[in-house]
Image 1: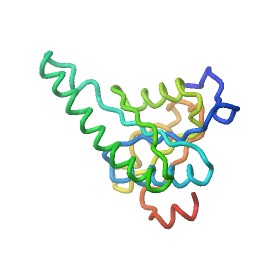
Image 2: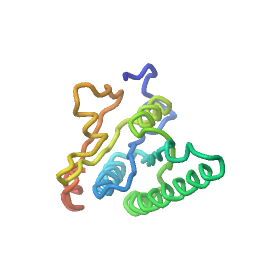
Image 3: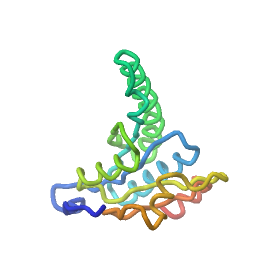
Image 4: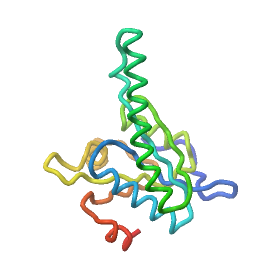
Length: 166
């Protein structure tokens, strides 16, 4: 997917943003910390995106609504943790977004909609299951072409190691 809309992140009246996909993976905090440190250094904002699976609540009416509410509560908990990190590093509140659907599709949709997003920050997994689904998608030749640069942070980096490069 290439963006049909021109990026506006660095035009007058706009503010660039780093987009971080927040999930329950162990390495997610590395992406959040990197984005916050880099945002502090470059004077941009941070947008935190948590995607919940819409398939989980496509069931009976009452049960589906209850499952959706629970998924949104879980997403807000993940965003709360990430926000604490961003605020402690940058002193500013990040933008928080929850979407329902497939993570790869929602990331691309948000990038297309918000032309101030200038960088997608992901962390690579450190366990034997691989680097993670979004990083794998980017690395595959059949994956979409992103309309913005992507930073992939090694999931095993310490805060000090991130400080040195961000």
